[in-house]
Length: 346
Image 1: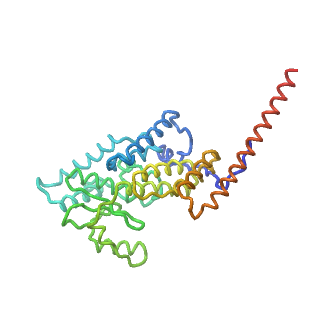
Image 2: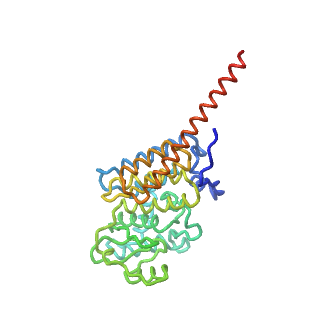
Image 3: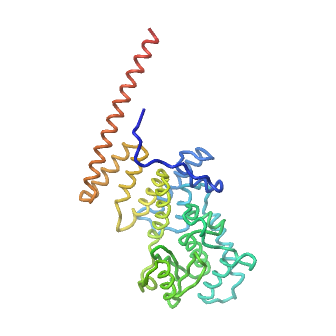
């Protein structure tokens, strides 16, 4: 059966730098190196994530959710190992603390222990400047193993360590960056887990202004307002992966992450149905046209006045035509096969 070539072509995955990086860059394969069992593990991870993030469930554990996200491409990621690695960091910090330490002392000690080089007795955590966009930076298990990552995953590690030492932290989203802060009164500092620094509100403004190339003023609510919704935290992680997969044309991997995103938003008051449209477009590119039509119709049912509704109707009509042409082509091929078989038997 012949299909016309979609407008978006799947790129060959780049040569992986390691087998586990390859798991990310070949996540578009139905089966990777370990075959069926790994494919089943990935499906089980998504089902577990959907249950964890179900609308009526309690606030999800960020570590649990992050491990399940990692398993979309790395089924070997597991929460007990990640939790044990975090406990190791906690013990290293405790060894440097006096019996009674105030919160800011604990925060500064975590930074020193985590980000000092091994020659100085530290653990050598650092931001990954050399391969920032790699999806392995969003795999919390690899971040803990390699001690490098992007701002949001390093913030998650820092937050988990601090919480186990009695200093609860929350995420603080900024344009193009991510930090975290203690959720305690009178401890008004921010931690940049990518660079391993503790800064004040004004220092964070200066840093962000430099990154953006223009003066930037922070909303004071970031320091004393409601903590960041864990689902919003996870959506930011997922958006990093989605952007990578789409920009590199790994469409079926993008489709998986879009579905993780939908599961995350299911429990939020404000939802974006644009993810349905994006899911349908991925299905279209993958030539899964029956599924694409069904999802597009669902999108229009939920957003009948969507700005792109006219385009969606045209796309549905086009896909319906493609399906009809396929059916006719299959029927013709079947008739030819029957004629050939009859001639062979006569």
